[in-house]
Length: 328
Picture 1 (cartoon, helix red, strand yellow):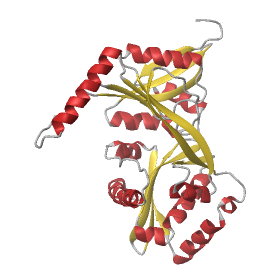
Picture 2 (cartoon, one colour):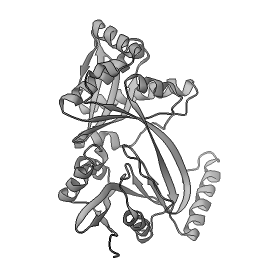
Picture 3 (cartoon, helix red, strand yellow):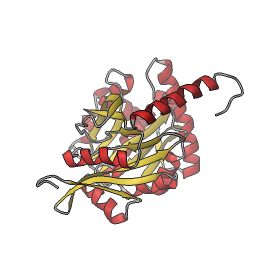
Picture 4 (tube, helix red, strand yellow):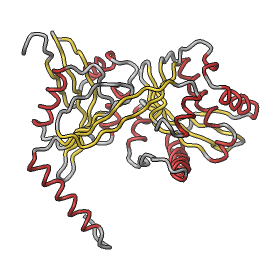
Protein backbone atom coordinates (compact mmCIF):
# COMPACT_ATOMS: atom_id res chain seq x y z
CA UNK A 1 0.00 0.00 0.00
CA UNK A 2 1.31 3.43 -0.94
CA UNK A 3 2.17 5.84 1.84
CA UNK A 4 -0.88 7.88 2.75
CA UNK A 5 -3.20 5.48 0.94
CA UNK A 6 -5.88 3.89 3.08
CA UNK A 7 -6.72 0.20 3.07
CA UNK A 8 -10.23 -0.99 2.12
CA UNK A 9 -12.14 -2.94 4.76
CA UNK A 10 -15.04 -5.33 4.09
CA UNK A 11 -16.56 -7.59 6.74
CA UNK A 12 -19.70 -9.69 6.30
CA UNK A 13 -22.04 -10.05 9.30
CA UNK A 14 -20.04 -7.38 11.14
CA UNK A 15 -19.31 -7.69 14.82
CA UNK A 16 -20.73 -5.33 17.45
CA UNK A 17 -17.28 -3.82 17.97
CA UNK A 18 -16.83 -2.95 14.30
CA UNK A 19 -20.36 -1.53 14.05
CA UNK A 20 -19.63 0.58 17.13
CA UNK A 21 -16.61 2.07 15.37
CA UNK A 22 -18.80 2.98 12.37
CA UNK A 23 -21.37 4.59 14.68
CA UNK A 24 -18.69 6.68 16.40
CA UNK A 25 -17.51 8.11 13.06
CA UNK A 26 -20.98 9.57 12.34
CA UNK A 27 -23.24 9.36 15.42
CA UNK A 28 -25.98 11.31 13.62
CA UNK A 29 -26.62 8.57 11.01
CA UNK A 30 -29.15 5.86 12.04
CA UNK A 31 -28.11 3.65 9.12
CA UNK A 32 -24.65 3.04 10.62
CA UNK A 33 -25.94 1.50 13.82
CA UNK A 34 -25.89 -2.04 15.20
CA UNK A 35 -29.68 -1.96 15.46
CA UNK A 36 -29.97 -1.17 11.76
CA UNK A 37 -27.66 -4.13 11.05
CA UNK A 38 -29.97 -6.27 13.18
CA UNK A 39 -33.04 -5.10 11.23
CA UNK A 40 -31.48 -6.01 7.89
CA UNK A 41 -30.44 -9.42 9.19
CA UNK A 42 -33.96 -10.02 10.50
CA UNK A 43 -35.09 -9.61 6.88
CA UNK A 44 -32.61 -12.25 5.76
CA UNK A 45 -30.28 -9.82 4.02
CA UNK A 46 -26.50 -10.14 3.81
CA UNK A 47 -24.98 -7.23 5.74
CA UNK A 48 -21.47 -5.89 5.21
CA UNK A 49 -19.39 -3.18 6.79
CA UNK A 50 -17.55 -1.34 4.01
CA UNK A 51 -14.89 1.22 4.84
CA UNK A 52 -11.24 2.18 4.82
CA UNK A 53 -8.55 2.34 7.47
CA UNK A 54 -5.19 4.02 7.80
CA UNK A 55 -2.48 3.08 10.31
CA UNK A 56 -4.90 0.64 11.90
CA UNK A 57 -7.58 3.30 12.46
CA UNK A 58 -10.94 3.33 10.71
CA UNK A 59 -11.16 6.43 8.51
CA UNK A 60 -14.66 5.99 7.12
CA UNK A 61 -17.28 3.28 6.91
CA UNK A 62 -20.89 2.38 6.27
CA UNK A 63 -23.29 -0.56 6.25
CA UNK A 64 -24.25 -2.18 2.96
CA UNK A 65 -26.83 -4.86 2.18
CA UNK A 66 -26.63 -7.44 -0.60
CA UNK A 67 -29.77 -8.84 -2.22
CA UNK A 68 -29.50 -11.76 -4.62
CA UNK A 69 -31.99 -12.39 -7.44
CA UNK A 70 -32.09 -14.84 -10.35
CA UNK A 71 -29.44 -13.04 -12.34
CA UNK A 72 -28.80 -9.91 -10.29
CA UNK A 73 -26.72 -9.31 -7.19
CA UNK A 74 -27.50 -5.87 -5.81
CA UNK A 75 -25.42 -3.97 -3.25
CA UNK A 76 -27.27 -1.07 -1.64
CA UNK A 77 -25.80 1.49 0.75
CA UNK A 78 -28.39 3.71 2.41
CA UNK A 79 -25.90 6.34 3.63
CA UNK A 80 -22.57 6.48 1.80
CA UNK A 81 -19.84 8.04 3.99
CA UNK A 82 -19.08 11.70 3.35
CA UNK A 83 -15.38 11.17 4.02
CA UNK A 84 -14.84 8.38 1.52
CA UNK A 85 -11.26 8.67 0.21
CA UNK A 86 -9.51 7.20 -2.82
CA UNK A 87 -8.80 3.99 -0.95
CA UNK A 88 -12.48 3.57 -0.13
CA UNK A 89 -13.75 4.15 -3.68
CA UNK A 90 -11.14 2.00 -5.41
CA UNK A 91 -11.67 -0.71 -2.79
CA UNK A 92 -15.43 -0.59 -3.25
CA UNK A 93 -15.02 -1.02 -6.99
CA UNK A 94 -12.74 -4.03 -6.47
CA UNK A 95 -15.17 -5.47 -3.90
CA UNK A 96 -17.99 -5.34 -6.46
CA UNK A 97 -15.86 -7.27 -8.95
CA UNK A 98 -14.82 -9.87 -6.39
CA UNK A 99 -18.37 -10.41 -5.12
CA UNK A 100 -19.84 -10.37 -8.66
CA UNK A 101 -22.15 -7.46 -7.79
CA UNK A 102 -24.26 -6.53 -10.83
CA UNK A 103 -25.83 -3.32 -9.47
CA UNK A 104 -24.42 -0.86 -6.94
CA UNK A 105 -26.71 1.82 -5.54
CA UNK A 106 -25.26 4.49 -3.26
CA UNK A 107 -27.71 6.50 -1.19
CA UNK A 108 -26.78 9.69 0.59
CA UNK A 109 -29.22 10.00 3.49
CA UNK A 110 -27.66 12.42 5.97
CA UNK A 111 -24.40 12.60 4.02
CA UNK A 112 -23.11 14.38 0.95
CA UNK A 113 -20.24 12.43 -0.60
CA UNK A 114 -18.76 13.31 -3.96
CA UNK A 115 -19.40 9.92 -5.52
CA UNK A 116 -16.95 9.22 -8.36
CA UNK A 117 -17.97 7.29 -11.46
CA UNK A 118 -17.12 3.79 -10.26
CA UNK A 119 -18.59 1.95 -13.25
CA UNK A 120 -21.22 2.40 -15.95
CA UNK A 121 -23.70 4.94 -14.60
CA UNK A 122 -27.22 3.53 -14.63
CA UNK A 123 -29.04 6.44 -13.01
CA UNK A 124 -28.55 9.35 -10.64
CA UNK A 125 -30.87 11.51 -8.62
CA UNK A 126 -30.35 15.00 -7.27
CA UNK A 127 -31.95 15.20 -3.87
CA UNK A 128 -32.91 17.90 -1.41
CA UNK A 129 -33.14 16.83 2.20
CA UNK A 130 -34.48 19.01 4.99
CA UNK A 131 -32.64 19.12 8.30
CA UNK A 132 -33.89 20.58 11.58
CA UNK A 133 -31.40 21.78 14.21
CA UNK A 134 -32.88 20.26 17.35
CA UNK A 135 -30.65 22.18 19.74
CA UNK A 136 -31.37 25.64 18.35
CA UNK A 137 -32.33 28.14 21.09
CA UNK A 138 -35.97 29.30 21.05
CA UNK A 139 -36.67 26.25 18.94
CA UNK A 140 -40.34 26.90 18.16
CA UNK A 141 -39.47 30.37 16.88
CA UNK A 142 -37.68 28.71 13.95
CA UNK A 143 -41.12 27.64 12.70
CA UNK A 144 -42.70 29.98 10.18
CA UNK A 145 -45.64 32.06 11.46
CA UNK A 146 -48.27 29.94 9.68
CA UNK A 147 -46.95 26.74 11.27
CA UNK A 148 -46.90 28.38 14.70
CA UNK A 149 -50.56 29.36 14.27
CA UNK A 150 -51.48 25.82 13.23
CA UNK A 151 -49.57 24.43 16.22
CA UNK A 152 -51.38 26.71 18.68
CA UNK A 153 -54.78 25.70 17.28
CA UNK A 154 -53.92 21.98 17.39
CA UNK A 155 -52.83 22.25 21.02
CA UNK A 156 -55.94 24.21 21.94
CA UNK A 157 -58.09 21.61 20.17
CA UNK A 158 -56.58 18.90 22.37
CA UNK A 159 -54.60 16.74 19.94
CA UNK A 160 -52.44 14.15 21.66
CA UNK A 161 -49.38 11.98 20.95
CA UNK A 162 -49.03 8.31 21.78
CA UNK A 163 -46.68 5.40 21.13
CA UNK A 164 -48.69 2.41 19.81
CA UNK A 165 -47.90 -1.28 19.96
CA UNK A 166 -45.84 -2.49 17.01
CA UNK A 167 -48.48 -4.54 15.14
CA UNK A 168 -51.35 -2.10 15.56
CA UNK A 169 -49.08 0.87 14.92
CA UNK A 170 -47.69 -0.56 11.68
CA UNK A 171 -51.15 -1.47 10.37
CA UNK A 172 -52.45 2.05 11.00
CA UNK A 173 -49.25 3.62 9.67
CA UNK A 174 -49.53 1.71 6.39
CA UNK A 175 -53.14 2.87 5.86
CA UNK A 176 -52.33 6.52 6.60
CA UNK A 177 -49.17 6.46 4.49
CA UNK A 178 -51.04 5.10 1.48
CA UNK A 179 -53.73 7.77 1.96
CA UNK A 180 -51.08 10.51 1.98
CA UNK A 181 -49.41 9.08 -1.14
CA UNK A 182 -52.75 9.04 -2.96
CA UNK A 183 -53.33 12.71 -2.19
CA UNK A 184 -49.85 13.61 -3.46
CA UNK A 185 -50.32 11.54 -6.59
CA UNK A 186 -53.67 13.26 -7.25
CA UNK A 187 -51.83 16.59 -7.06
CA UNK A 188 -49.52 15.39 -9.83
CA UNK A 189 -46.44 14.88 -7.65
CA UNK A 190 -43.80 12.25 -8.39
CA UNK A 191 -44.29 10.03 -5.36
CA UNK A 192 -42.14 7.17 -4.04
CA UNK A 193 -43.37 3.59 -4.12
CA UNK A 194 -45.10 2.35 -0.98
CA UNK A 195 -42.75 0.10 1.02
CA UNK A 196 -44.49 -3.27 1.20
CA UNK A 197 -41.41 -5.15 2.41
CA UNK A 198 -40.87 -6.59 5.87
CA UNK A 199 -38.24 -3.93 6.62
CA UNK A 200 -40.43 -1.37 8.48
CA UNK A 201 -41.48 -4.01 11.01
CA UNK A 202 -37.87 -5.17 11.41
CA UNK A 203 -36.72 -1.59 11.94
CA UNK A 204 -39.22 -1.12 14.76
CA UNK A 205 -38.61 -4.53 16.34
CA UNK A 206 -34.82 -4.05 16.27
CA UNK A 207 -35.18 -0.76 18.12
CA UNK A 208 -33.61 1.50 15.48
CA UNK A 209 -37.08 2.85 14.59
CA UNK A 210 -40.04 4.13 16.58
CA UNK A 211 -43.67 4.86 15.79
CA UNK A 212 -45.50 7.95 17.05
CA UNK A 213 -49.19 8.66 16.48
CA UNK A 214 -51.30 11.79 16.71
CA UNK A 215 -54.81 11.20 18.03
CA UNK A 216 -57.98 13.16 18.73
CA UNK A 217 -61.17 11.82 20.33
CA UNK A 218 -59.99 8.24 19.79
CA UNK A 219 -59.17 8.74 16.10
CA UNK A 220 -55.63 8.32 14.79
CA UNK A 221 -55.01 11.39 12.63
CA UNK A 222 -51.37 10.79 11.73
CA UNK A 223 -48.44 8.44 12.15
CA UNK A 224 -44.67 8.72 11.73
CA UNK A 225 -41.85 6.20 11.76
CA UNK A 226 -38.47 7.65 12.66
CA UNK A 227 -35.06 5.97 12.78
CA UNK A 228 -32.77 7.02 15.60
CA UNK A 229 -29.04 7.01 16.36
CA UNK A 230 -27.01 8.49 19.20
CA UNK A 231 -27.19 12.05 17.88
CA UNK A 232 -29.47 12.00 14.85
CA UNK A 233 -32.98 11.19 13.66
CA UNK A 234 -34.33 10.43 10.20
CA UNK A 235 -37.98 10.66 9.21
CA UNK A 236 -38.44 7.25 7.59
CA UNK A 237 -42.10 7.65 6.60
CA UNK A 238 -45.24 9.51 7.60
CA UNK A 239 -48.95 9.50 6.82
CA UNK A 240 -51.96 11.62 7.72
CA UNK A 241 -55.69 11.38 7.17
CA UNK A 242 -57.62 14.14 5.43
CA UNK A 243 -59.16 15.10 8.76
CA UNK A 244 -55.71 15.03 10.35
CA UNK A 245 -54.42 17.56 7.84
CA UNK A 246 -57.44 19.76 8.52
CA UNK A 247 -56.80 19.71 12.28
CA UNK A 248 -53.06 20.40 12.00
CA UNK A 249 -51.87 16.90 12.90
CA UNK A 250 -48.82 17.08 10.61
CA UNK A 251 -47.40 20.17 12.30
CA UNK A 252 -48.44 19.03 15.77
CA UNK A 253 -46.91 15.54 15.48
CA UNK A 254 -43.74 16.83 13.82
CA UNK A 255 -43.08 19.33 16.61
CA UNK A 256 -43.95 16.74 19.27
CA UNK A 257 -41.34 14.33 17.88
CA UNK A 258 -38.82 17.18 17.66
CA UNK A 259 -39.37 17.93 21.32
CA UNK A 260 -39.08 14.27 22.31
CA UNK A 261 -35.78 13.98 20.45
CA UNK A 262 -34.48 17.25 21.95
CA UNK A 263 -35.01 15.75 25.41
CA UNK A 264 -32.84 12.82 24.31
CA UNK A 265 -30.15 15.36 23.29
CA UNK A 266 -30.27 14.52 19.58
CA UNK A 267 -28.66 17.19 17.42
CA UNK A 268 -30.29 16.92 14.01
CA UNK A 269 -33.61 15.68 12.66
CA UNK A 270 -33.47 14.81 8.96
CA UNK A 271 -37.03 15.15 7.67
CA UNK A 272 -36.12 13.31 4.48
CA UNK A 273 -36.10 14.48 0.91
CA UNK A 274 -38.69 16.21 -1.23
CA UNK A 275 -38.69 17.95 -4.63
CA UNK A 276 -37.75 21.58 -3.84
CA UNK A 277 -40.82 22.99 -5.61
CA UNK A 278 -43.31 20.58 -4.04
CA UNK A 279 -45.89 21.24 -1.35
CA UNK A 280 -44.07 18.76 0.88
CA UNK A 281 -40.87 20.82 0.62
CA UNK A 282 -42.78 23.99 1.51
CA UNK A 283 -44.17 22.19 4.56
CA UNK A 284 -40.72 21.03 5.70
CA UNK A 285 -39.18 24.47 5.27
CA UNK A 286 -42.06 25.85 7.30
CA UNK A 287 -40.92 23.65 10.19
CA UNK A 288 -37.65 25.55 10.26
CA UNK A 289 -35.68 22.97 8.26
CA UNK A 290 -32.72 24.01 6.16
CA UNK A 291 -32.29 22.58 2.69
CA UNK A 292 -29.38 20.20 2.14
CA UNK A 293 -28.55 19.17 -1.42
CA UNK A 294 -27.02 15.80 -2.27
CA UNK A 295 -26.98 13.23 -5.05
CA UNK A 296 -27.39 9.46 -5.12
CA UNK A 297 -26.08 7.23 -7.92
CA UNK A 298 -26.67 3.72 -9.25
CA UNK A 299 -24.04 1.86 -11.25
CA UNK A 300 -24.10 -1.18 -13.51
CA UNK A 301 -21.13 -3.10 -12.09
CA UNK A 302 -21.64 -6.38 -13.98
CA UNK A 303 -19.27 -7.51 -16.70
CA UNK A 304 -20.48 -6.50 -20.14
CA UNK A 305 -21.52 -10.08 -20.96
CA UNK A 306 -23.54 -10.44 -17.74
CA UNK A 307 -25.06 -6.98 -18.21
CA UNK A 308 -26.31 -7.93 -21.67
CA UNK A 309 -27.69 -11.22 -20.31
CA UNK A 310 -29.53 -9.47 -17.46
CA UNK A 311 -31.07 -6.85 -19.76
CA UNK A 312 -32.11 -9.54 -22.23
CA UNK A 313 -33.74 -11.58 -19.48
CA UNK A 314 -35.59 -8.50 -18.19
CA UNK A 315 -36.90 -7.70 -21.67
CA UNK A 316 -38.12 -11.26 -22.21
CA UNK A 317 -39.78 -11.26 -18.78
CA UNK A 318 -41.65 -8.04 -19.60
CA UNK A 319 -42.87 -9.49 -22.91
CA UNK A 320 -43.89 -12.76 -21.23
CA UNK A 321 -45.84 -10.95 -18.51
CA UNK A 322 -47.98 -9.17 -21.08
CA UNK A 323 -49.81 -12.40 -21.69
CA UNK A 324 -52.57 -13.12 -19.14
CA UNK A 325 -52.01 -15.94 -16.72
CA UNK A 326 -48.23 -15.96 -17.04
CA UNK A 327 -46.05 -16.03 -13.96
CA UNK A 328 -42.27 -16.00 -14.08
